[in-house]
Length: 353
Image 1 (cartoon, rainbow, N blue to C red):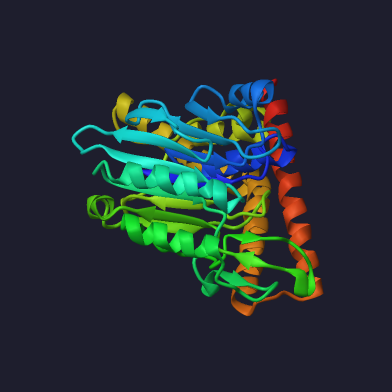
Image 2 (image 1 turned 120 degrees about the horizontal axis):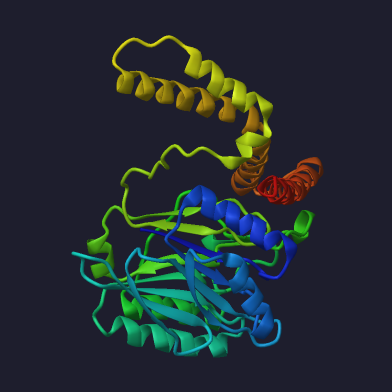
């Protein structure tokens, strides 16, 4: 199972939906924990309508423009029971066929360490139930000096000591990560730029024994100042979608020629063999044409994402980017949003043909 946890810094902004759809398309998560939605009431209802029928949802509404958590899961994947005891978390019990149940706790911790104490108590009580548990999200606190770069020098404040004590007391295990070291950046320039590892995935030892090959990936920061986290419970092969004839191809006169030319090729054998073989030839030619011609506009997004990832990785390793590279990074982020908007317009137009 794949879990996507992302502090989106506002789900009502124009860049959220296109970026979220892109993440879902590429990473194929079964569960998504979206935090800091800054939505409640009618705004939250509008977002749910835009998500479509593939997802079921459970929401903790924001208080004004502060906080908010939205939990999404794909229909039919497993049995899910969802609830919350405080505004800083959502708890999901996952029951899959032929597997023991386990608990996912999606977290968006308060920026106030006194309020966070309530969250630590709630999670500790959850762990004490003895059910394998994984806790993921934005904890709004760091554990040590290694979790911070830039800004004021690290000091071991009371909130950080309380965070360490909570992790030690509950026996939670940090699942580690691959990708950039820091999950949040304040996006300031020069010496004012600060990076921290605020987003994490912890698990109880029995959950880790249940999924020993699990892995956590820090994805590039796009449309938010936080990295999305992707938690995969297994190293199994990725699902490859079957061939489907896309309706949008019909708007290209060339697609008709591809099918016509494939169908005209001489094939030996009985009638059913000839039909089957010509269908296979048409499928292969359409796949190649789609990849080389139609898919070109989508490869631009992949190229921009690769450039963003490269610059953020270099920043992560070297500590700072040059003024020119910082400008390039901002430009790539703006281009990425623009391309996703173009894709939405493209598909909306083609769907009406």
